[in-house]
Image (cartoon, rainbow, N blue to C red; front, top):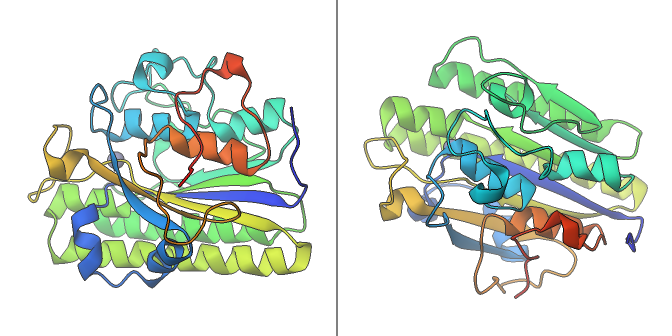
Amino acid sequence: MDTAQDTARVLVVGIDGVRLDLLPELDTPHLDGIARAGFLAPVEVDPGTPTMSGPCWTTIVTGVGVTKHGVWANRFDGNRLDVFPDFTTRLAADCGKRTFAVGGWAPLFLAQQGGPLFVAPTRLGYVAPRADTPEAWEEVDDRVTAEAEHLLGLDEELHAGFVYLGAVDETAHFLGCGQEYRRSIEAADRRLGRLLTSVRQRSGDAAEQWTIIVVTDHGHRDEGGHGGRSPQERTAWVAACGPGLPAGKAPSALHHSDVAAHVYTALGITPDSHWTLDGTPFTP
Ligand SMILES: [Zn+2]
């Protein structure tokens, strides 16, 4: 099954709740660089999927839709992650790969609210917010980024990882999609830049070839909030660059479930038919 060249690696950076229509007016050089080297393209949240973080992130990291993984809201109870695991868990358990997942939203990483989504990556990092406020979430995202930098700096094999940044979404919920929201997206881009620097330092030493995927789960209404089907809420996006992804050629149709599918393909792994992935790898 595994035909990977040993040098393939994948980093997925999830930034929660970033409106696609605002990106052109913001200072996001690191995301722009990924878009130039590969693509940045819209993803419409699947019609049957609530435009909420729980279902969307689960689809992104499992490669299957809500009718399979069973996460319909921000509580993860009743999920079927034992059958449809996230890519960090499956790669570690079934494919002999070393993986990590880091972030600060409890049900993704802890046995809380029916979680965790990331059941058993090789390395797991969770940073609890000191309060449920935009300021506390900016601190969390900084510490999450530092933890990911630490992991990427270790002298050990890491084939794939997921980093979750939540401050942008928190800011929209508290303050709407105004100046603070825009500044939070720019702060997330600076954190993306730190992660890219860590990847570059690593790949120089180890001759690794990295695929970078940056993805958001849903948008927000102007006043902040999501869950409905307005264009602002249902429009998400994916940006990616790496081996096999020609510059400037976006896939013709993109779905959230394609992210996990591309992770496997980028690592040279042909998904087993029993995994019944709904996504397909990014192909221009
Ligand atoms: Zn979200």
